[in-house]
Image (cartoon, rainbow, N blue to C red; front, top):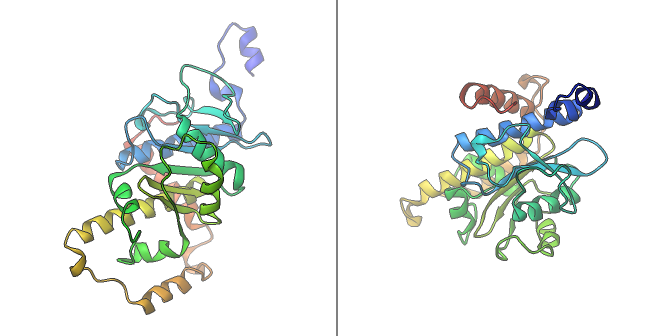
Length: 266
């Protein structure tokens, strides 16, 4: 298609030059960015969400350094390899700290198809709390058994931090970057979106709860914490239907994006 358009004197558009599978990933990732902005989890032109490009080349897509989350479209995303080479250089580069963090996880985890990292005020607040995420509510109880932590080493500009970041992440999919922010990943956009949404809302709930003073806070009883841990390991109830929860979440998220932040699929 791209060759035919060139022969006709027309400039190929991004959908003409990539596979259908890559275009779908681009649309999902652009929607992810728009939704994050709509929820207030963006940070000027900083922080980043990435997605692995289908295929054997180990490329991933990330935001162009200079566009706000609410401006991201499927066509504007930048493709990069694990060594930091831009596959198709254009008007914008990428955030180098974003490259360091996302290349580390994409390179180490086969299930990291989508990765989100935010500097939300509440996420940063809880990341700096000595006790981390506390068992204050049902959302937090569901996260704590599968939450990891990575100590702050400075701005993520040093390539040797990647090894320690991956080691601390282990096999988890949600992480608090100490004194820094939140991170979540998933094998699908729906899983990554669910994970980051749950982590962000748990952090917000904790900040609001602790505003009444630590001495007035009721932690969930240990027996209840243990029960939630067991419940999270149960098979999905057939009454919930055949579609996975993450697929249902993402379908609903896309409908919201189409209503409130349209234009991401351009």
